[in-house]
Length: 303
Image 1 (cartoon, rainbow, N blue to C red):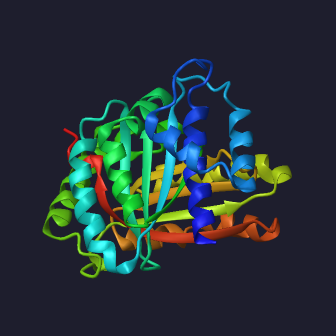
Image 2: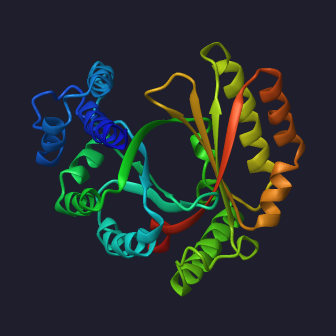
Image 3: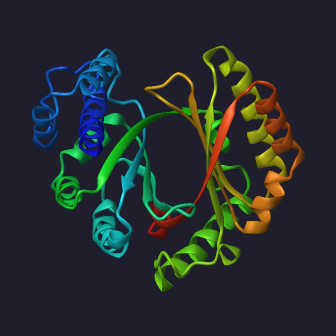
């Protein structure tokens, strides 16, 4: 079962990146992905996923890319995984087109790490996957039986209001710079998974929504109203990002962060958030919360 899941994940990742090739169908597939394709074509579910994604090869290369990757890391390997990523992080500092990224750890389990990246273009992502740095890191992941799943995302909501640093006004920009500096100092002191107190750290959360296709428009209206209220009323909010899973017609993701646990508690007890909960209850929309801790981010080395 685990082996089949791993094969599906690897092929899905390869197919996703083939999707990004877009109209330039003559472009060759990176050798690292060719290897994954050759060894992962014997599963019916893999072939179905590949067929689904390849039907969308009309995507153009200059379209932005948003990628979520889940790493299933055995608890005994957490320290080693973080040390390996620390070296990989130094490579990511110079990657062309990598606009934003975080490596985070769920605080509700002792297994899952998540990489979230935003790319200027799909071509930039494709080039990175063909790089020695990417190949070396994921060869190490494979050699140590760390299971990987990749999810392509689509931006929803108001992009100009997603990140505090991009919102209008010097106050927001200054608050974003100060928060990034504080977080960097905290992470430099320790990235130990066990040595962490959420009361002394910013609050990060991810909420997954399962929305039936007939309810999507109404759901987006509701979530965009929450985003507007967050930007207007919650000074401690760092980002409020709405994404849709590209390979599912019912799966949405909200990622948010606040300067403090108190700021997060103010959010989840606010009228606009309670209204969203009531909307979800009325329409049988399922939601699941994963709170997480940021271990690495490109905000650490941005000027």
